[in-house]
Image (cartoon, rainbow, N blue to C red; front, side, top):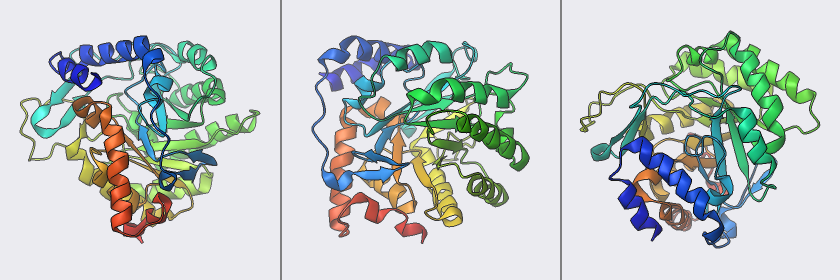
Length: 348
């Protein structure tokens, strides 16, 4: 039934289909069955947390923390909400979300549309920590001090998340990616660590980076991250590049490209970052994951955890169970006793 609903929603324009999906998920959440317990071989201890499996829902689906617990019921090991900004904002003009069906991809230029951190905080305060939920924070487009925006978001929301992700890599907020530059990144991370030092709960802090970084930029980010002592990196956000292989009529739309065409560049960036930082901090692999083999490749490239989103829009929520089953098959084929044994094998 759920898979049929997903196919029907595929006939609607992309953004209305997404809004309806979240609304229906929220409405029917009490009726959703709980996914079966995960095979112990998929368990992973990362960020000081035990994850029942390494497959997570990336930020962007549940922007306003409306349905984290419902999404966990589909078998995700964790769910990341957001991106959330201090003030509500409507985002960029519509249309701003485009399917590339032939390429199993999506282009978005949403622009951090969300109802603001206070609205999300009230919902997150009511959920009761029934599973692992991360919170992705950003800055308002019109902010005069973007670093202050991140500090506000972290201070307000850290108490509700198992970890917090700092999103400086969206291509849809002008100038935001400049925060990946060495000096700005140092200022940002140390400002957030100062905030954390004043809080009772030391929520793990992760940084989400772009896939479009050159060798020098990767070197600088690795150095700043290791020096700062934050707990993790998410590699990667959407890309502004457009592979020549794209076939869809929407391929020329402005915005960030996600889905299958992002798999190779994001996995390469992940492997390169693993070579720079080793196992000193946790890496989360994102970009183009649509089956168990893709998730396994991210893990072998250095990811302790893996996230997906775009493939879910095409395949429906049954994809999560299939990926976990296929991942177990990959582990068994290669003689790994558990998923953590395969982390970083290809980046050694």
